Length: 527
Picture 1 (tube, rainbow, N blue to C red):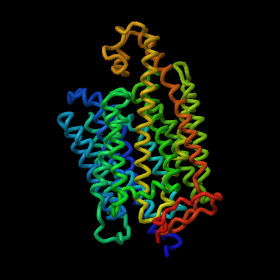
Picture 2 (tube, helix red, strand yellow):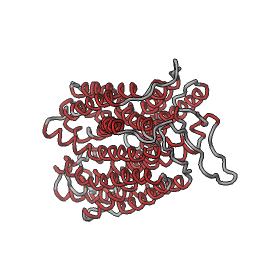
Picture 3 (cartoon, rainbow, N blue to C red):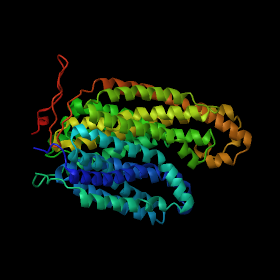
Picture 4 (spheres, rainbow, N blue to C red):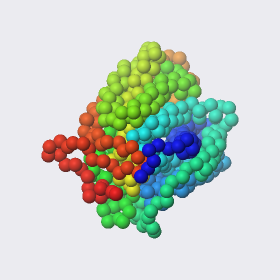
């Protein structure tokens, strides 16, 4: 039986291990967004404007593919060695990105970096589940969520600063000291019991099919409505490929000895409900992070660096939400109220952000961002905690990574829909605000950027800013139905008692609604 509480030495070791995990989370989250503000310099140096979007897409694609694979590998082979391997792959990709000589090399190396990055975030979450009891886990997961939010929002700011001061290659080299430190901390202080499994059979066919399906889905969501119309042959072909490959994956998983995503999870309400809420949260979080900087730069005239600083209120709200609720959960053992509250607060934040226009004072924008950030913070890591608490210990990695995988896929799709609506609205507003198309850049809407806008005549600048101010904020109202779905799902979350020992198996919910299926497959018993 686990000790009632760790001694001073064990607690110190846990703190140092957690420091190493936190550094890895910062790296994984930063590299999703840090490249954005460096792209103009990268394109100018490597002469690859036509491939610019792939610098980001290749990283997201590879990290998404890797999420469920890393989770399962950790369950089978032990989380420490898998986590260390992810760090090494990430650092190797970072070095290669920094020395890339053309866009083709950079895109390939970004994919390698993303393949490692997918294991960093998942590995940190799963390792915490191995080290900390469910009751105490909320405090640590809250800090991880805060680090993820902080890095996601501040990535463009740091990327712009490094590009201006040291050159775009340092956007990748900056990963080396943090990554090496994380590797050393994990090697020195992370001690986990050996995995009691001999010669596990990895699901190679399932992994291949999942990777292919993920590629199709991410490309579909990246291109639909922006690069290609939703009804174009390319998009329809990707949609068909996603469905067919996904169906084949499910068939293979039903027969696999060690499935990458255990099929019973897709029938388990204690996995499906919080994961569905996580998908909704991911859609709203990434849509907000993606489009608010555009508003601040194109409407308020902020530079990339200043726009990053202006996003701090959202970061503050997320920090308060994730860390605060994590501590309250550890103190009370109750978690169901926070997803419900977070859904309502997110809806309020969306309403506030939808009221922005060219004349809105910054304090109002900051208030909307703070409210939105707090709502996201109430949900982000608490939903992962809920999934972990309901999963048997030998499947914690698979359950954690699968939930994050679906959140990432759902968020990509949501951002694509938001982007399509925004581009359509912007085209209409620009046609009204700038009747003469010759006054705009040759590429039209697609060619507009803060740098291009600054080179236009002042009357055209004002007209374009007005068009952006009218077109962008109303898209936040599209998030209200998503927030409503999140609220409904949050209301159906079952509150399963949080264990107080590290090796505790999930308990049953204290009571069931009459006639309701408990939603647990026989494999969930675990012992």
